[in-house]
Amino acid sequence: MSNESVFLKVFRYDPSIDHAPTYKNYEIPWREGLLLLNALKYIRDNLDETLAFRNYCCGCSWCMSCLMMVNGKAHRACSRLLKAGESLLVEPLKGKPVIKDLV
Image (cartoon, rainbow, N blue to C red; front, side, top):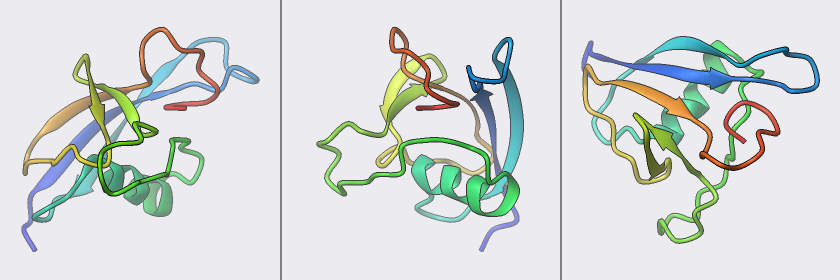
């Protein structure tokens, strides 16, 4: 395992309690083959259990349930491979109502 990390700046917003969206920074330990969906699961399981995202992975990159904006472009979280030292801005899809965070 490498000592490298991946840095995610994640959109956070719960319309039922928040007045406006915010962003929260997370540092995730990098490993070979780390996918964005796995990094989000790491955040939820180890750093912030309140993070909401679509935790569904068809394994084929077909269903598009995990689509989100990554540095301003739509990507499937289940197939977006992360690189050591990479910094990403992660947001919900544009033009869709936000239920909570990345959902």
